[in-house]
Length: 200
Image 1 (spheres, rainbow, N blue to C red):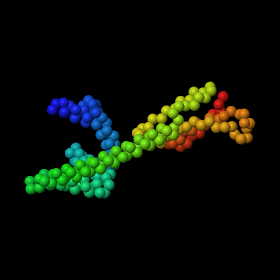
Image 2: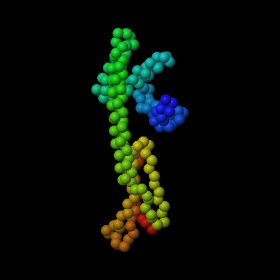
Image 3: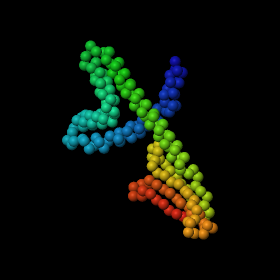
Image 4: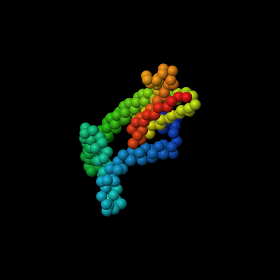
């Protein structure tokens, strides 16, 4: 029995220690709350007591989450919560607890399916982006070239490349090649950047 529980815990936690799991949950919760933080601050009136502020924040946060669901899932969530709330006020409908929990599990399964599909699409996009950008810098005499791209999340909008171009048609065919460095979709104010460097 103990070995089974230990195996189950290892599978659920991926072998991560409890403290690390809590730190990960705390970080993910703060990142998720940041999505709603601006909306809550902009809609929260002044003059609330601590308890009143807690209730108001809870109400705004609840509706902010509900409205981010599709209309069908909103209805499923509200019906499930209503069905779960009925047994709290009466002992005549205890069987409704099962259906309320089942509705929440169905909603969770749908949201997880969306998350898995989105994660897969983002991983494919990341692979395509990595394939499009050069893996190693070109060897250019008398020049050291290095580059690195770090996405804030799974994928980024930045792009760079290094291209050797033949001499202009008006110049002698024996002229040096030109090195074109391309950086695109970088921070605001610099939408596209091109620079031509003559090779030595």
